[in-house]
Length: 304
Image (cartoon, rainbow, N blue to C red; front, side, top):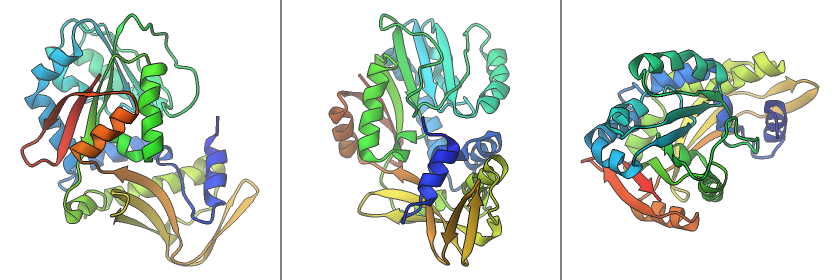
């Protein structure tokens, strides 16, 4: 498995420099993203929560009885609570997060709110090839809960592979998944470049981690957060733009960054209902039910 150091050295060594967005999420990055979800400009979280609340009984019917719910990239584990009490005798909830420190710190709150539902939080990078940190059986009613349009962070081929993995590795019977929809560019860019600058701090957190964890010497003040919409690929791209020539040193590796050069840190692909249907069909799934908000900003789907 590629480590943080390996991925950073490879990514910064490329002509078109890039860093994997999963490295945003140490404890501080997770807390920053929690702040982002409450911003006025960031419509995805509040819209998805409204959908989950409005259709919680229908979602519960799709999930069925005695479910083991696994949530990859669980974050603040708040969305699951919207419909959990509507479920029929759920067996267990397993939230997975790349930041073990974060997921272990917030899980006790879940136990207080839902004392009768066993929770088994794990620090786990769900994009890795590592063995699952728990045992599962294909005989169980295993449901993947994957909200937040996290699938949009994957390139299309990677998204297909991941959806296949949820069936083969995680033994999922169904997936409840949130997907952001294509909309006007102004709304999209505002969601990823807020006025308070929280998203900018979140984006720069990856540089901060390189400094603290990999002994880097990056001057964060030399980088500007930008968000652009790539029309041809139908995705928001977050980048860090260098405002002047500078050199980055990381454990014996040296990287020259020119003025106006950009480091690509995140993609967030947007879908139409049709394009998402085509994607899931390619991965061997079918859409059972689709729920959309009144303004058609966001969608939640049940795949089976």
